[in-house]
Image (cartoon, rainbow, N blue to C red; front, side):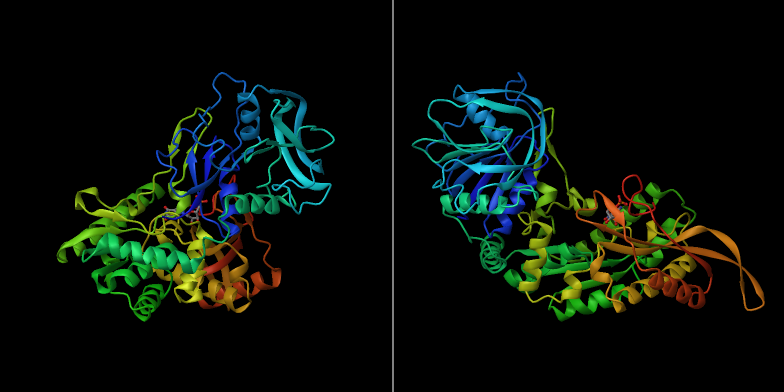
Length: 506
Ligand code: XMP
């Protein structure tokens, strides 16, 4: 049984960040909605109550019965979590005179408190709250304060329960990690998670779960599906069959490169070149959503057709990762499940799902991949959309336009690697615009396409900033593309950020 810290989510935007910090400290944790407490606390070594957009005195505020936790397990309330402890035990929480938002210096009132161990006096902490704790219940002991927030941290006497008004999970709390580390130590679970331990445990679990069963998995060339495949392969060897569908909209030479990598990794892969089928289905289609639907549907058809040729398959492997499955609570109290049905693979296939990466964040997937001995270029590749170049060729897709874009994109990406810029950007690629403009080459007038170059920095693709690539680099790329790619006579650089623009143009 994997020991863990449980985080109860009351709908704060920083709940995931609490999880990240704990994982960064090598400790396993899980986030669950406040109203989905597990029936059994086996394996749970401590509990954290998150912040919330609500006030504790609001009639609609999210409440939870803590009787099974308080006094039995170490408990830490953060912001709303701390206020709800105060409120439940007869203390006072009231609207602050003004919203307390920003940095504050923490005065430690109880130097030997275990939660605050190692924090220096006047440590900078991050405040973000509209309510404040105006009086602590009798059995609560004040352990830290700031100039504006007298009750900034407390402990309940005689039990391992703490509350902090500030946000130790926020980057701006300079010693937040120390505080969270102290809580981990109190729970006694430090360093119970590493890529190596994850692999050992998961491989064993997969062996137990799958026995002699056969599994099928769709490989995309991306990090998640690749790591998932290698992990499954470790557990069940050739009883895993992978299918790699080339829809003809991949980067130049990508299908061959990826297949060679997979073979090198010892995976049992069936590569299917279905480009003709996709080009035919996409002929004359210009609407982006229509293109996505056609590509998604075509992918399922090809995968299904290949799967039917195999016998005795019981399971479908998927590279679903943690951010896709965390159920987050929104202001209405509803639990929103971001449903991640990769590629929309058909339910009628009647297969059971196996998702060994369900508990991992993206960077943990990368760590696991490297620990599994996978090639760094496979692990650190930029995100690439499922519909591929299909949504980077604006308007109608033709084989000729695919050729033009593949050439231009290949020049851009190769030069990016050569200049050491590839690993500095989150995602980059070329886009083929559906307009032609006049140019001059030698003595001849040209009337050719325009290529747009895009490079963005991001953390999670929810927002993104355009990268300030060096002018000299952009000049070289533009020159190279216009000189080498037949059909292109102009290059532009996209200087839009998300929002309001999206990363992809379609
Ligand atoms: P946008 O364009 O919405 O993209 O800013 C955010 C991230 O999602 C990727 N993306 C897709 N991935 N199928 C995918 O698998 C799609 O239809 C799709 N559309 C966008 C995009 O490349 C970026 O990483």
